[in-house]
Image (cartoon, rainbow, N blue to C red):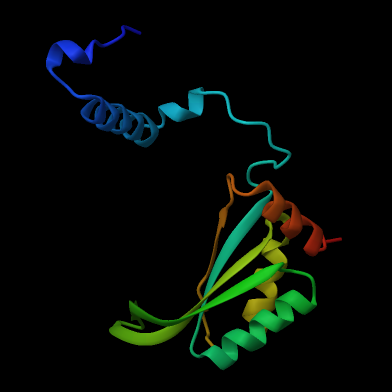
Length: 152
């Protein structure tokens, strides 16, 4: 990789820092950062997940959240009020005010969470989606793993 001489371009140190910052952002957004060595971590990428579930009210979301945490299926459930959902259902466009649940759990528990939500949720077809957690605070992710009982 060639070194750039910004002084020849008439850049000040502040402008040089902005250019370097922009190059760093470009590198990260292009996925090139994956080739750089990562800091040591005990977390295994994807071993924890975040599941998203919408509910018709805070009361329903709280009931589901308490059930998930009580049964050790989730370490934490954030309940985010006032989410507007626009969707097509049974041939009609709908717009509803809902609550979004953000469920932190072990990836191995997702199928159990899906079963519980389907059983206890008032919707015929509740939104239940999950994404693996690739990285984060080691301390927090360790707490998630310790708080959730792995399925048998």
